[in-house]
View 1 (cartoon, rainbow, N blue to C red):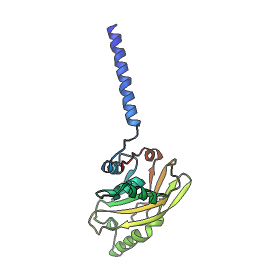
View 2: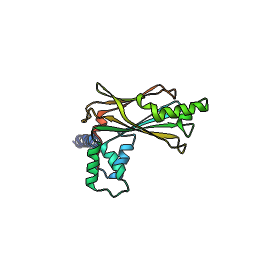
View 3: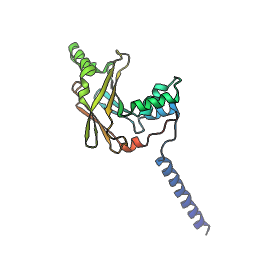
View 4: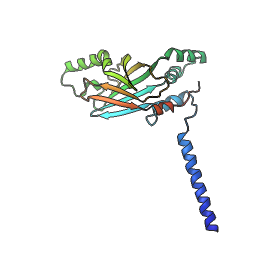
Length: 209
C-alpha cells in the first residue's frame, strides 16, 4: 500500500511540474520598464530580432514596435506621458525595422570582397541611395515596398551599418507571418529572406510608460 501511495504521489508531483512549466512557457511576458522592454525586444531569443550569417557577412533584422521606438526616444530624457502617447499616435500606419549589415573582415562592410577603389564608391552610392528598391516585405498576399529608407554611415568606426526602414502597415493585428526580403546586388550573397512569425509578434511584452 505504501508503494502504491508513493507512486501515486510521484505521478501527481510530475503532472504538477509539467503543468507549471507549460503554463510558464506559454504565458505572455509581464509588463516591463523601459530598460527591460528595450532589452527584451532586442534579444534574438525572442520574436522580434533575427540574424543570418552568409559568407563574410552578418545580416540582422530588428522589428521595432511603436512602443519600442517611443521607449528608445524616451531613454534618459524626462518626457511626459502625454508626449509619449502623441508619439505613439504619430507613428501609427507604418511598421518599422532596423536592417544591420556587418562584415567579419572590414570596418566598413561594403569594402569586403571589393576589387578596386572605384567599386567602393559604387557600393557606397548603392547603399546610400539605391538599395531601397531591393528591400521588400511580404505579408500574406501583399508585397510591400519600402516607404522610408535611411542608411546610417559610421565612417569605419564599427564593422556594421544600420539601415532604418519603414513599410506601410497592412495587417495591424499581425495575423499573417512576414517575410523580410533583401535582394542583394552588390555583396554577392544573393536574395536574403527572413521570416518573422505572427505568433512571436503577438507575444511581445507590454511597456510600462
